Structures are given as C-alpha cells and as structure tokens.
Length: 306
Ligand code: FUB
Image 1 (cartoon, rainbow, N blue to C red):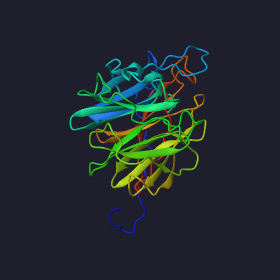
Image 2: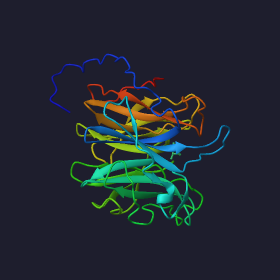
Image 3: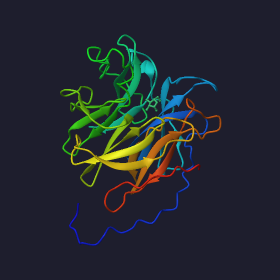
C-alpha cells in the first residue's frame, strides 16, 4: 500500500459498461478462455465446444486462437493446437493457459491421458502466439497420482501459469483440491514438489495475477460456479478471501475466468450460454471490463449481453 493520508478511499462511480460485442465468437461455441497480451494485441485462446443440441457431456477436440487490437474487433487465427498434438492424450481439449518466456509461447492444457487414468496437463511450445504449438517434451507435465488417488479422475485440470517479477514461474491447477508447483526456467518441467492450498469451496479454474505488489488468486467456487478471489503477499499465499467477482450463469454451471490488463484497462474473460443454441456443453466466451477499488479490492462485474 501507499503512504496513508488518513482520508478514506475515494468512492468509485459505477462505470457505464462498454459495448464489447459479447459473445466474442458468434459462429461456433467456445469455452474456457485464456488470454495473453503481446506486441500491442490481446490473444484469446478458447476450447471449441462441439457437443450437439441435447448432448450430455463435453465434446472438445481443439483449441482456437483469436486476436484483437481494441477488444472489440477479433481476428480468427484458426486452431493452433489440438488434443492430438499430445501423442499421449486420447481426447478432451479442456481448459488451457498461455504464457510467454524468452521469446517463446507456452500453452498449458488439460487433456485425457491414454494410459494413466484421468485428466493430465501437457505443455506445447511455439515461436508465435498463433501457433502451431508443439509438445516438445512428448509426455505429460502433470498426471493423476495413482498412488494417492485411484478415484479422483479429474483433479489434474485447469492449469493457470504465472511468472513472478523475480523470474520464478508457477503452475496452479486442480479440481476440488487446488495444487501448485514451481516450473523450471525451461517452462516444460516442474521444479520441486507439488503442494496444495487449503481453500474452502474451491471448485476449479485457478488463475494468478499480480497488481501493485498484491497477488490475486481467482478461481471458481461452488457448483454452479461463481468467480471469486483471494489476495496474498506472495504467489503462495497466505490467502485472504476478497469477494465475488462474477455471479453464476443462468444456465451453464461452469464460468472459467481469465484476467488481463490491456491498453490501460483490466478485463475479465469468462463463458456463459448466451450464444443462441447455447447450453451446458455449448458455451460462449465473453469479456467485461474489471475495476479495482482504491483499496485494491476487485469490484463485482456484471455480465453484459453485447
Ligand atoms: O471445459 C471443460 C471443463 O469445464 C474445464 O476444464 C473447466 O474449467 C470447466 O469449464
């Protein structure tokens, strides 16, 4: 925090919502946004929801990437990576995250493993934010630990990757139990043991960002999910509950956020059911401006329809 003047924080007037053109992608169903700001553009990575009307499970084979210079007009760059990019995966292009280090782009993603029961997390590398991404390590970065869990098959999902100012990288992931580990500078190997945070009501989709020296751990809680956050003085806590950022959707039980700063504003991506024909397994990604109050807390974000 800054030097205190004794004056209370200024009240932040509720800003008029910007027309951001939600949902962002209108010709296919999309879910699980990840975002990266690079060279003056924001890149948005999504999973493609292909379940038919009345489908009873996710049908997800590939990720797609879009970019924008203004958060309103988006360029479609196609599919930079599919679950088949991971030779050890058998299906399910579930949630992913993206980061850049030393000029290379690292795409972390959830897939279903061919031989180790349950979900696993892989990492694929590219020289370009629009891919193609290649699984240079040729094996999963994180798999279900069968010595500890023989019954939880989706606890290794939803990677969130964060590189701190001192260069140390972290990966956060999990369902029900929030796990994390350090990453080596090469970004494709864990550096040390897998640890856990004890977070009440944690469901999934952990995401780390840092602002003015404070670490913000955002994630989904409950089911149907709402987006909430904790703050801490380090990337490993200790954590203090901050509040609800976004309320649960009307229909879709998942919500999966990603948060970036772009051209001096903060934005939160998420998904809902609002593209016509949408539903639980036919989601659509949207974006809203996100505001910090003077004390660093995050103001509640209403969803906009357009
Ligand atoms: O899209 C499949 C799964 O649903 C994701 O991995 C979760 O975050 C939830 O959105």
